Amino acid sequence: MAESIALAHDLGHTPFGHVGEKELNRLLKDHGGFEHNRQSLRVVEHLEKRYNDFDGLNLTWETREGIIKHSGTYDRPESSDFLPNEQPSLEAQIIDLADEIAYNNHDLDDGISSGLLDYDGIIKLKIWELAKEQYGKALPKSKKLGTREIIRTIINILVTDLINSTIKNINDNKINSFTDVKNAKSKLTSFSPNIEDANNELKKFLRKNMYQHYKVIRMSLKSQKIINELFHIYTEHPDTLPADYTENIEKQGLIRTVTDFIAGMTDRFALEEYKKLTDPFMLV
Image 1 (cartoon, rainbow, N blue to C red):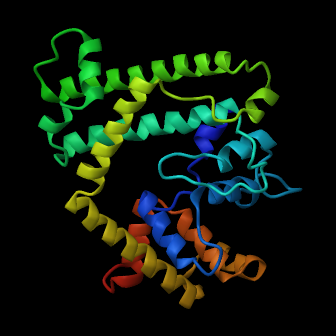
Image 2: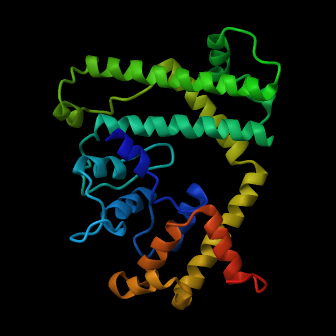
Image 3: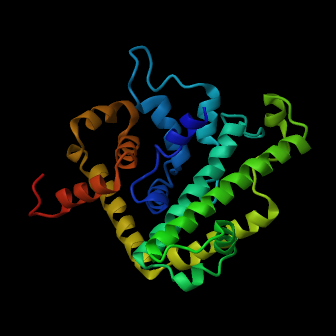
């Protein structure tokens, strides 16, 4: 179940990540908005066609609950149909933090290799110092290899701490059954206070120095423009949609059809569609 939730939790994400999601949500403010966890659930419950007798995939209630209740720094899903007052399964809770570990360290690696992040600032972070201490030997002379060794160590620190802290929380709260998990006052997966502080410092550093970097902001503005123009072109000219999508308009409405089409795009596909629809020299 953990693997299923992990693989499915971002199926509904728009092109260009949270920037694309924010823009699509703005465009749909009068149509219920857009939230990628809800769209992920829509993909597995309605959009996937694998069975003759019903739409969607044959997933358990608990797996679908884990998808809609995925939460983190950028995710605040609405889950009124999935017992919102109860905690999600341990598997789903683990995925929330596993996702955070993955994207924070991926962004850290990307930020260093792209030159967006100042290396002298990174090595002062508490989590970097902890990783260097745990690594316990001289780093490779190659800066690239040294960075990879430290980031790999950071991931190990976070994963190990998550496991140990979660076991402690389960024991401290006398959790003995699935019902106990669901009725717990708070989530049972967490980092220890010391590692939580170090991880929060890393997130703040990335937000300030990478996500708010002027080059990233420029790309974000381009991404918003692409999503915005694609949405208006498709809604104003439905005949530009592929045939298998135009067939859905009568059944589920134009706005929903366009939303599904855009949300299902990769970054590259969205860029290609934008060029085809706006560049007169681009073959369609």
